[in-house]
Length: 291
Image (cartoon, rainbow, N blue to C red):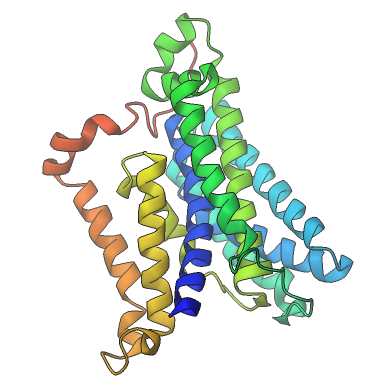
């Protein structure tokens, strides 16, 4: 049972990192549905960098860097060009899906390095994830930077009149968000499952995307949802540890995705928009052209 709990927390940490990156971008008004693609790039390039150099730190830094670059790219299409944010995000996912398969194929197999040591029985990234949730909450609740980010996500025209540089604030948000997505992928490939294989994330980025909506853009609710999804994912991999003999593991593996679909379906309903719509950034997904 302890093994199940620790692996669940490790999985939830990866969901947390990726979802917080998406949350920061969305609070500024930029939607990025390419979370899966950014995570694939971070996982693959971080894995390769760590294997070639023998350094986990370099692998994690590469994940951060590629995530920042993808965030910048998404920002260019969405902010500077004013393009469709969904199309741009899907492009990142499609390119990530194909290109990482080509780049990573020669490195298929285990990482071949000693595992990152635990701290009090847990991965150090678990503690880092909790600190990151706290930092994100503090950013949006207690700082002027967080207020600027929320302002451009609610009404960019008013924010511009108030002296806030909308484009700069949104670029900062999507680049920071991209860094967290890339780092989430690197953590997956270097710590949680250090064995590279074709499309080895298996939809984790889409679950992270759903978590942002599930949390109603609240970092603490997001953490709770990540823990829930982490436990469900681990249950789908090792149901015999908790519920031996109850349903097939292949049926359990569909549960996280079924719940993801249900969450997204509920988010699109008139009931949810009427009851909880105030939590959604008003300008989310809408390009802003400075007048």
